[in-house]
Image (cartoon, rainbow, N blue to C red; front, top):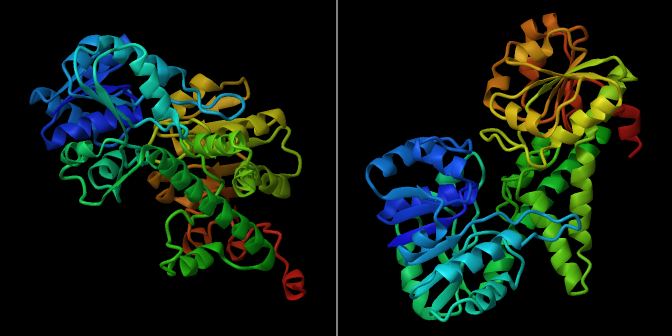
Length: 446
């Protein structure tokens, strides 16, 4: 089949590249000429492990191309995939300007029947609006399909090629064989439903995963007060097949382009039909508060932060990506600056993106994690990049002014910490040492 993918962000680029692997011919389209030129040089505008090798292979084999000409790309394609951004508006609603603009341009370019497939995350009812919008600009026949994505940055290629399930929302059942053929080889677990239910599945899935994260962080906070170990609690919980072990890692909360945006959008969707989603509002509030646990632990150890030197390890919202959108590091660093600290920052991939969005005279940009630690009063680990686990903590402690390590992702084991001289704080593991708030007398009174 011939596909045009509109948008070359995480969803569009990864989806487009992966669709070539089962024999389709794909044109990835973007208005950004610089981005298209970069892609034609086989350079990815996003950091995603393995993406550049796939781009190079499929460009050379002629199954993949990149273009800024939307009209020509639509005319040459059987299926047009909408993968443009739907960022949050100030009130939390999804901003549909880009998807509506792309739909209008698609309609104006059509010269015959097309299947319009939406992979962008959109509120329930949006595909019907897209249908009406396209119909108002063309007399050519078309069908609308909702095919929400479930990709995780850092493992997006694997998630596309080996998904748990593929969700297809249709109102024309005759399209089902075509949609199954399009996804052939990815998985046999294809769930076909109506369009509105497909739109809701995406939001409900992300909201539930965000709820698991906020829930285990609340449990971690209680563990610190009663002397339990949240990693053991999560492991025991995860053995229950009804619960599962995924998304039960305590830390400083979720970030990125999906969970914050989609939870807020779902709250707004509920509000638009006069329903208050109390549970999800609490999930968002818990997540917001959790990142400032880092600041509280610094205050426990250092008192005032004015004049302190704080090292930061990790700026991306998760490892294996350069995405800093809604990353907890942003608010933590801003809080440290506001309290008068000098902040030394290191991230192996995301530093440039972070600096483009926020810079300050109190920030020091470092090329190595050891540089961020040298002369610091404390190190705060905010993103669990694999390289941090292998750092020599004995040597690290010797380079610091004060030996305080705040592990916001529970990266280190007791064996790694013992004998280092570090005052170590983790999340929900009071037995690991440091000022945890745990008191045996308090615990015994419960």
